[in-house]
Amino acid sequence: MEYIQDAGFIFILVSTIALLTYLDKKFNLGLAESSGFTKNNTNAQLDDNEQTIVELKKRIQVLERIVTDPREQLKRDIESL
Image 1 (cartoon, rainbow, N blue to C red):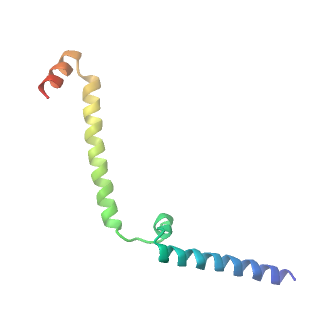
Image 2 (image 1 turned 30 degrees about the horizontal axis):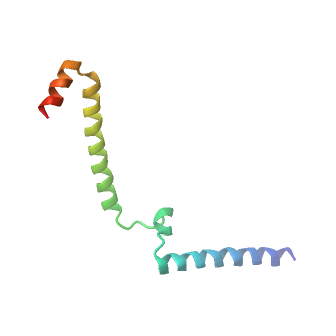
Image 3 (image 1 turned 90 degrees about the vertical axis):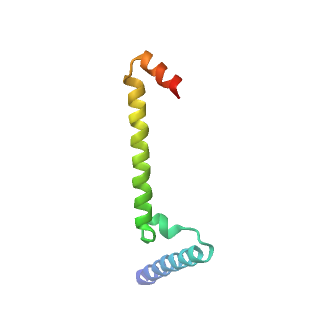
């Protein structure tokens, strides 16, 4: 009897996975991409992430400069913009 319960559980599990896979493909839900199973556009994503990191580092440098500069220098920089 326990064997039948285990087989039923496995059947339901496999059926659920198959249904989710089908729905993901049919309606382009993006479930596979969010789970990390696919590696499509990995290089493009890495390039995009690297570009974002570079931009954020530039912003941090500007903020550090604003915080550490004397008040008069800051006024001159703002007026020169």
